[in-house]
Length: 281
Image (cartoon, rainbow, N blue to C red; front, side, top):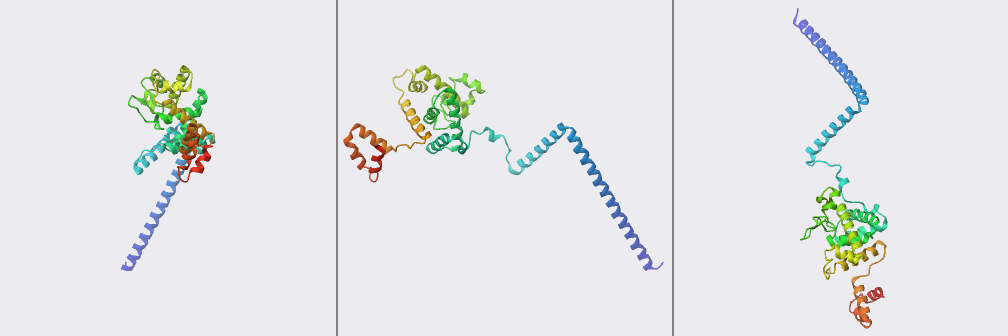
C-alpha cells in the first residue's frame, strides 16, 4: 500500500468519525430537548394540580429575586412600607381639605402629603366626636407645629402633646404607649381627651384650659386664645375666604381703639396705605 493510499484511508476514517460524532451529538441533543420538554409539561401539569406547590415555587422565586436585589442595591426591599406611611396626595382630597393641607404645609414648613393625611384624619375623627376639624388642627399646630415626634419638658408627646403616662390606658387600645408616636393614633387619643375636657368644662375655651393643664390656675398663659385664633384662620382657609394681612389687622385694631388714628396708621406704611385701608374697611 502506497503512502498516498494510506493518507486517503486515514482521511476517510477521520471523515467517518467526525460524521458519527456529529450524528451522535445531534441525536443526544434532540433527545435531551425532548426530555426537557416532557419535564416542563409534567411540571406544568403538576403545578396546576397542586396549587400549594405552585405557591411554594413562587415564594422561593420571589425570595431569590429579593436576594438578588439586596446584593445589587445594598438595601432590603419592603413593598409594604408605603402602606405604613402617614401620607396622602392633597389632590385626592375634597377641595376644602386640600386648601387646608397646602396652607398648613406652607406655614409650618412640612411636606404637604403627611399633612394631607392628617387633615383627612381630623375630618374623620372630628365628625365622629362632634368637634370642628379646624379646631383639632389648630390644637396640633399650637402644640407641636405638626411634628409627630415632639416631646415637651414635662413628657407630653406627639402631634397633640398628650401626656402619655397619664393617658396610658387610652394607648392600650392601640398596642401600648409607643403608639403615641404614630400620628393618627396620637391625634385620635388627643381628640378624645379634648372632647372629654370640653364636656367637663362646658365650653371650648374651658376645655382648652383643661387640656393645657391649667384647669386649677388663674390663667392658661394665653393658650386658649392662641388655639382659637389659629382655629379662626384655619376655618377661613377651609372655606376659601381670604385672610387679612397682619398690617390690615393692626390697622383695624387701631381704628377700633381710635378712629382718628386710622388714617395716620395707614399713611405711615409707604406704598401700602390705600391697600391696607381698603382691607380694613
